[in-house]
Length: 109
Image (cartoon, rainbow, N blue to C red; front, side, top):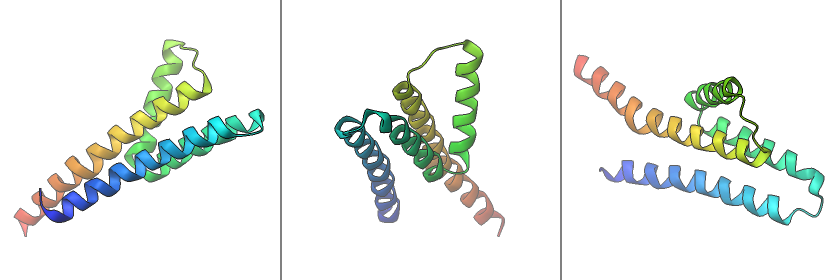
């Protein structure tokens, strides 16, 4: 792996781990239990934004699948399912799809 790819990989992992830790700490230490919904909403929204454009599509597909299955999820489960789908979509997007497209266009030039 080239040095720039290794730095990008570390930044990518650090971003998602940092968001997850921030959410867990905020959720557990909030003095007002009514704010927990907002904390989880912030987490899901940030995960989708960080993994755009495929993260939003993946979150929508997963949400539709959960709804179609009729699964009753707690807000915390919903936030973590959104997180996992965004992490997977972001990985595919930045570390598989973009390098493949870049290589394809570089060969044409």
